[in-house]
Length: 105
Image 1 (cartoon, helix red, strand yellow):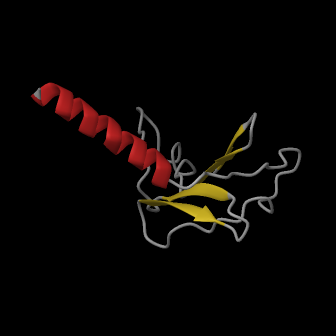
Image 2 (cartoon, rainbow, N blue to C red):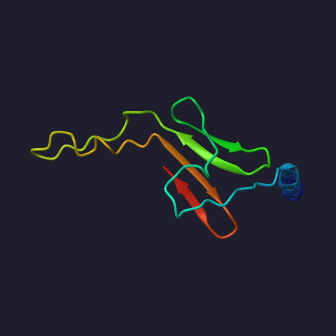
Image 3 (cartoon, rainbow, N blue to C red):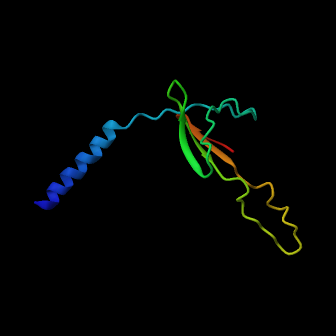
């Protein structure tokens, strides 16, 4: 009897969660140009934080803001540390439409 009650309560909790969640809306990005004009999300001001940013029409982007200067330093024999100087990712955005997934760094 306990298992049936637990199963019923679990199923009810899942259904209630599905009913109260808001629909997610994303947007199409023009990939033929290299500008950031299609991306509206500015992202969080703090380091190592991600957020879903929405515009007034409800379209959204996930934006991750990373700390500056925390890239992994690769220093093979004879290298001066310049190999990974330009590999520090400071911001990462993701959105999608019905058929594509878009990334911006």
